[in-house]
Image (cartoon, rainbow, N blue to C red):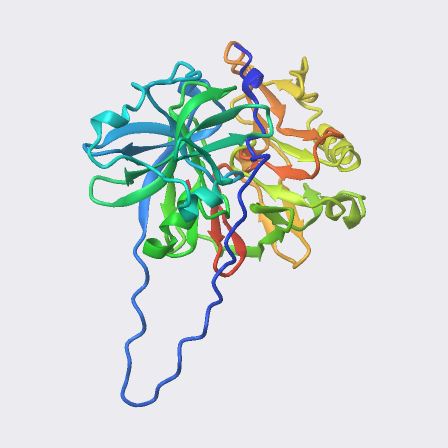
Length: 399
């Protein structure tokens, strides 16, 4: 099976407006009497994993909905806000998923969000028979629509968010694989990270696992970075017309010590989205061509393999005990550097040819309004979203 048939750009087309980040006043200095510093907000960590067994190249977590809690496996997506699961009675369309579809009538804590509720306004303010309804359309053409609802979300067996606003999906169409829904981690008011901020603080992080057979983690709240090396932070940029998305100011790319001969304006003209819900990294064609050509220059010892659309640079690594790849780094306008893990450069698109690896970068289509750093390039790195301080951090070799 060619798994690239399920490639997704999962950033939301219609995102709700994000609430402004709270301003952080410095803790007052008191010389007498001594005052203990405020306790750090708690945090909750759950495992994440590759979604390959569920026919998706996105990454997934398992959480519980309802009382009693029923477990559902959901894609994690920083490019959208609304979390949702498929719900009975599936009045529109439900695709085939891994677990039984959620039945709201079996939960003692379920309720529909009424019209006039502030969270209904955040979802677009549309109503049907006094009940708030939602619809989210994604960049790959898939969509979900249904009833905006409240439910208890169990992150672990001991930590839950009561009254969590989510989409009870009645019409869900597109390439979601076999996952049960999606966790939205965007900047908007309805995302999991925003709704959890009052309890856990305005920070979350994740490490997408280096290998399909291992686990990483998703942490809601602030913790000591798991990576051994010093975390490098770059500014988190917000676009007024896309307030829910996380942008960074990429200015150059280094491959094997060779800095691409591309002006910074090629990258900064339209901006660069940092997204866990897009599989590949999409670069301006001029930058992509330069990067690909340099990569091919360093890979002449390996046997070329046929292209897998849209990937044009592939190799047959049959019989190779080790693969030597050039290091790749993204450099940002504030001087910070994101050094990609060695596992973040190639993707293996065909289950029937497991030794075929392809360069996991592509030229940005003319219809795509910005560059995207996708989830393959994030593998093995702890990515820290400090929304309160408006910065994104990168820690190497974290999972």
